[in-house]
Length: 323
Ligand SMILES: Nc1ncnc2c1ncn2[C@@H]1O[C@H](COP(=O)(O)OP(=O)(O)OP(=O)(O)O)[C@@H](O)[C@H]1O
Ligand SMILES: [Mg+2]
Image (spheres, rainbow, N blue to C red):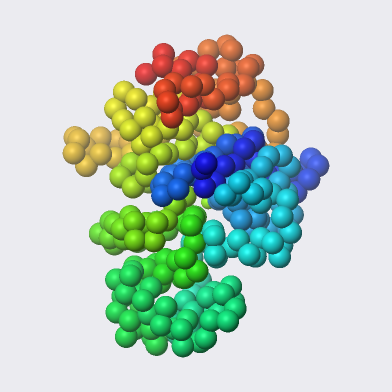
């Protein structure tokens, strides 16, 4: 059994005419100890999908279809108090843009200890601080810094603190939404290395959201590419990113939109046009307008996720024939 099994999930912001269907019938699974990457252009629904899992969506968002099974239990219809049992202890989140989310007037040690004190009643303050110090050491910060404040830390160190906090209640799944975007490449590499090694130490599973395909290729076991609220392609990192392997024209164009330091300098391709408006309904494939290989059917029939190999699926009518 997978740790997380999301099926046919749809999430809508607002309702009626102005409603935005940000996630539309999406499946997502994360196995025990597995790292799954989520990628796709800005606005394709990555954060919405991720936040729907522990239901941290804003009030005016609603889950309109689907199930979110975590260890076999459906989270989509749980009450707030039941979800509070799951958050932090089973599933923790490193939020997008969280680098500045630390409390400026509380010491780092107290901030890491806080979720432990809230979610593990009966733990003494001293025991929580001891664990906070161990967590700081685990993320490569000396325990002696636990009485420092966030402004005394660099961006990379603050991100390590956020990771320590996410691990405070020994969760099984960490959802990390762009955890390294604001950092320089050296620090990014260190943080990724850290996440990988912590996953072994703490037996973690991870849902990692990143715009950076090379980060996902290096870090993740499987990768899911989203486009306009739908899954375009999913498979092992090699299925999706391997040369000649990626099966969806959108993934192929995304890959071409990334600079490759080993190749001759040239202008990056980019993908002309914009994703469709998610407040409108769509016929056919959502990428058809921007796709260079689309055929008539692509504008009328919505493609299903077709099986390519064991773990590889692609939602394209031209699967395999579009390279
Ligand atoms: N709080 C909100 N209220 C209304 N619409 C929202 C809200 N958050 C997101 N949306 C809309 O839902 C869609 C998906 O947004 P989401 O933030 O999930 O995308 P994303 O893939 O995480 O993008 P990014 O890469 O920029 O973080 C977008 O069209 C966005 O405009
Ligand atoms: Mg986002």
